[in-house]
Image (cartoon, rainbow, N blue to C red; front, top):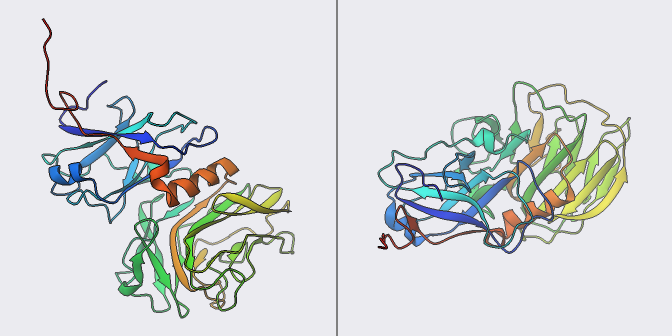
Length: 347
């Protein structure tokens, strides 16, 4: 197995017991390790890189703000494409680390999530300078706090940190131009709401600027505008305070609603009735575009795609984001001379 020049230590990133049902291309795999003692003993800061399963070819990866090599807290995404229905323990990629390096080497957030229109982990400080929230696709801050969001609203969430919304707090997303969803869309996030879905008091945690596509909490529905009507597909009841992945898709023919990667309902709809014409405030997070129907609770890992993701993709997304250790594990520490650091010569 090849070794990356200039690096002393590495660990294999391996498939866990839960694999995708079939190949997934361009999926951004989450590695979420609370504290790796080997890495903590070697590093004083984030000084690592990620390469392919051959041990040396760079692959795109992105690092979360709460990742901390000094404590062994590994929180990052990488693109090992394609993911396969492999065997448990097969190598997906390698994580190299060495305190002699200058920092994170060859990080590429855009390349990691290039199949998305918007990818916002929502880890940034809501009370910082506007716009506060980073989009990994453009590697620029596009989300702006509103309604009184403050630093105190950045809270521990299912994946790192998320934003806790209440009292008409919200985020607007503005870019140079709005994405094109005429061929399909997927919108998903992890929600930990203050009330069960279907309950009163909170409504639209995600909505495009002209109600073209939205997730409605009180109505338990994924809804879109099509030919002047508002076809919808309902998702299952979500219990208050329980982190839940809610996803909505449209593929040109049908709207589908999913919870935790499982399909709940399908409704026919052949037309995305209203194009998103402006990049200014094209997405509202935590409230509807009219400034009412607020959501209350935590939102984490917001993802919007210009295609309808497959059932296989969404099922693996649920497992990878909410049951991470079942999908990916770190192997034992290796050095340039082998797992034990010893080198043997046979005569």
